[in-house]
Structures are given as C-alpha cells and as structure tokens.
Image 1: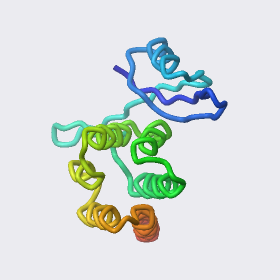
Image 2: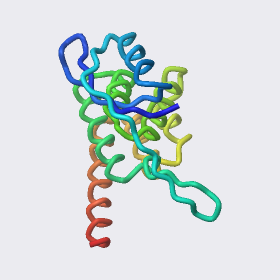
Image 3: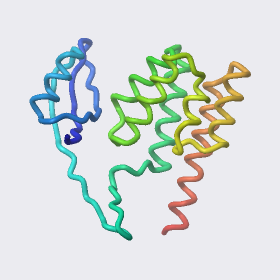
Image 4: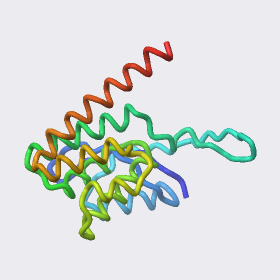
Length: 168
C-alpha cells in the first residue's frame, strides 16, 4: 500500500489537503468520491529509508515539533470557533500531510468517539508529552480547553524556535 497526498474540493467548494493510504490512485479517487470530494491533485509519497543498525527509519514518519505546534494552534482555533472535538479532529485529519500524524489524529478521534476524554486519548501516543497531556487535562477540567491549547501552541512554537537557533 502506498501513501498519497491529495487536494480535493468538498461540496461547499472549499479546497482540502490531506493524505491517505491506498493500493493505487484509482482506489484513492474512489475513496475520496465516497466522502463527497472532487479530486484536484494527487501525489505519491516517496519513502526514503536509511538503514541504521539493522533498522529502517522513514523520514516521513517523524512528527516534528513544528507539526505538533501547527496542529495545536489549529485545534485551539477550531474549538474556540464552536466546533466539537470530533469535527475539529476530522478537519485536522484531512489537512495534515504527515501520514504518521494522520494515524495519530485518527486514533485520538476514534478514542473520543468511543467515550474517552481528549487527554486520555492523547496519552496513548508518544507524540504528546506528559506536560502537553497535563495542560489538556487542566483545560478540560477548567472548561478552558481552547485557552489551554493556545498556551500549549505558544510553548511549542517557542521550543521550535529555540531548537532552530541552536541548530543554526
């Protein structure tokens, strides 16, 4: 199975970016049509792998701090606009280009649909640190999840900027 990134239009004419795994481009087009989307562009990811001590590492499977910061900021914006958690996660799942992160978001959404809290669902994934989960839990408890996520996005963006300065 290959991973494809795509651009498609929804019923409202809005352009949606996302990625999905499919056997071929034809199967992907069928899946997107079933979701009511009109395909504009499709690109296949090229998986570059490096052998390291007998293990293969894919560069596309890493979830960068910058990706997490963007996700958190967008999630906070969607929640503060009045969207439900599940609707927000569906939107973010469609817009995320990193296939590994799409899997994480889909898993979190599935856990929430089955009755878990957001912090419980996120705690199952290594992507989210203990601090991140604690801030989410505090936001859920205090009824200020959007503010808590905005603060978390600020922290992640500062962390990413510091990493970039150190690297340079």
